[in-house]
Length: 596
Image 1: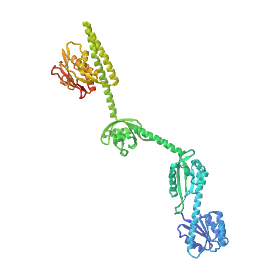
Image 2: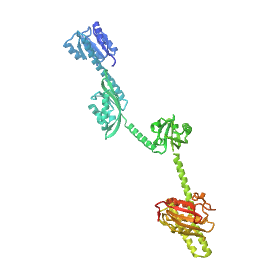
Image 3: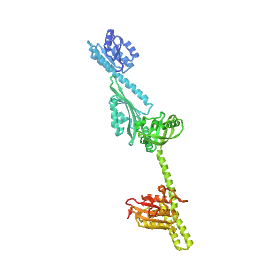
Image 4: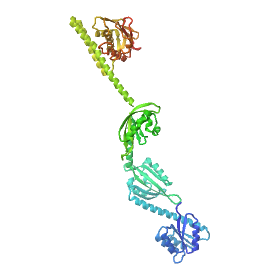
């Protein structure tokens, strides 16, 4: 309920004015000031904030209509009720013509005071509402002079436009259109947002404040955005009588927001695409920002991470180091530290963390930002690189060894030719040179393809062994016997090198005459010799690169054998030869890799 209505009652009968005041003030929303003359009434009207005047008609010196004239000169709109005991149609007509708000004749009962109170109340409320509207319109006009917003005021049902300014600037529509049709602005609302706008209009008419942003269309279907704030204007009984507010063009702001949002989404996507862990730590030690990799690595979900201190992600014996690194970063330095994440399941994962001081635009510290990398993966890459280097070193040694045997054969055959004059030795030397050239081609292919074994075919082991024997021996006290044969699916050149190295091993390690025998096995073949054999404790080491029991040996011949075996998927067993007394190598192909 609003403040009480202030009523001025003028009547020349003191007893009557007291009676009227008594009855009117029984109404809680009315307060009465009484005077017994028109002159005194005008003085009171000038100094008091009167919202309704009640006056008798027949008074000495100045009657009620003359008093009305004086009041109207001071305020042309204040309600004036003529309450008189002398009534006639003539007086009533004159009063109405003079501009009284209401005319009421005094009666004999007390009900008349209730009627009078109602008429005073209704007239005063309308007067208040009118004054409020005028004051509001004046304020709106003052605001409109200093703003580019569209300022507006409508009746509560939106049927009448009471005030508008800046309509053309914001909406891009002629102001005459909204003056003729108060709902013209709805035609400028984007079609997809019209139902929403009608909804907030209803909310405002129902007495709710509104604060909303929606789209509008201007000109050639140009889409813009406006921000609207509105307030309901209520009368004394709480009913909405008007709605007032402003509409502001926020198109540029929305475009900036959209651009910023797109940039944020891009950054978010880029951060989450990182395999490394990304993090922002606040000055209180909690994580303010992180990427998906942190959750994937640690096993904690986002809600858990938000409640954790940064040191809680690490094993107990690493936490002090992390705390020191955080403080160092806060003090202005860039830090790098190795520590182990301890996952939600207790697994420890080594990482390298980097962090740098993070500040706001004013230079105030707000935390640190950094990344964490799977040192274990880096170390695995380092180990793999080391293994590759070792394999290249081993390959270089194997190549050197495999070339050495036919070259020595060439040299030996040429020396024999020079000593004996036997042209057959020259032919053997030329054959050895041909094998060197073939081996060179094999090596080139192997290096380019990074494969020890090339395409396979069905190979006769006996024939390949005899070819390899010619490339190995120049000793007359060395003999080869091939008992039977077996066919295998193999790279013929690689198999020749394997046999060549086994045969060379037998010849080179024999202190005197040596006999070598090759025979078939159920799943492969064997090579046995009459030499001194291989001690059992060295049989696992014999295929290790660099291992040799021969003075000046390279230890690469048997390493080459291991490479070729592994590339074919074969295996080899080293035992004693019961028949010849030396060593026996059994080359065993896997099931299905043998051709009988």
